[in-house]
Length: 146
Image (tube, rainbow, N blue to C red; front, side, top):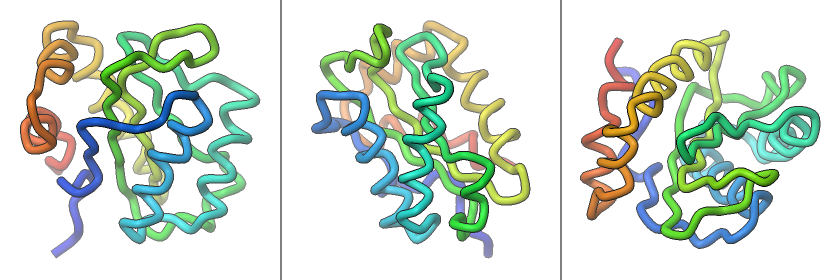
């Protein structure tokens, strides 16, 4: 059985970061802990961010590595960290940092699924209001659908 893209242990309901860079580290550390990426991938997330912001709107940022970091991806995975207080992401408020690692361009499909959820303000509000990690995971579980 293949592992799910998003697993419950990769969802954090109350992130501790207070800066953009710490949020990238926090989302990246979950991907490393899940065995999805090597540490070099997290380093490349900063390179990506410095060249183009991964802020997407509706309190969402999707930090991910550069194309050069592909060899440091072990498997496709997603991490999500929610912040009670918005983080200043290059002048934009972010409450959700979603770390993405995609093998063989799988991240494009994953990105589109995340974008669909976050383009719906009612869905975003549900994610903001979700009481627990389990509740957040349940709202996003569809990203695992084939």
